[in-house]
Image (cartoon, rainbow, N blue to C red; front, side, top):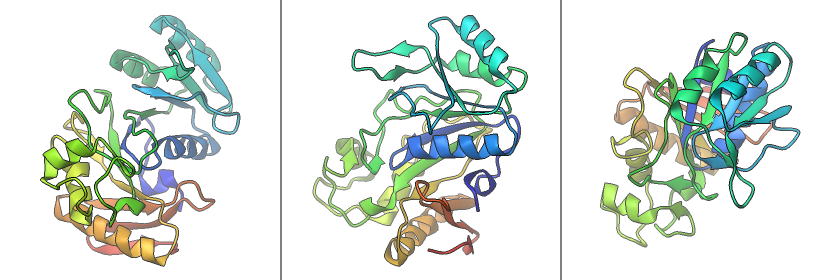
Length: 261
């Protein structure tokens, strides 16, 4: 099963990836899958990310003016390949993201079926809780995907494995150094002040439990998925998005389906 199938992506969807544990890889993988289905896809960020490699995107457009960026995307639309867009570069060479209203303008370009947005930063950690100004989810997002790397479950709450560990403590009551459980992960992913904070009320929310590389990790991922379902989710994608087969299974109503480890 492919990511776009697991997330049930439709034409017109604006997908926002938040949290930690593989957002960038998931963004480009999802975009390439949609392009392979004949869709026009734009990827961008509302925070900051490194420029894409040639394997991740076919074209990078950087413009400081919204209308010029939209015009350049419109000229590209209909051609094969993923186009990445940004509003500039920061002092270390990262791409500076686009404002909320730019995302809405990009989704309306004729020939663009989907926009996929990295809407959060995690400094390479598998788990995070947001500060007051995070995440930056576009108001036009129709699908919000909170992401976690399964390897954090069972680890102590420290900065080595968790971005913003003090925020995890604030949200859940877990003390520094205590073990991160499946329940804690689910709380941070879904609580109103957690990873999906600011998601549009009409947006679908489908979590991704990522980096499931073996049977032990799959069992742990199922524990996280069970907790997410108990908090009201209809379905949870369990995956390893850097692998050839990115989806291990989809857990819905306590019934997993998929390809196995």
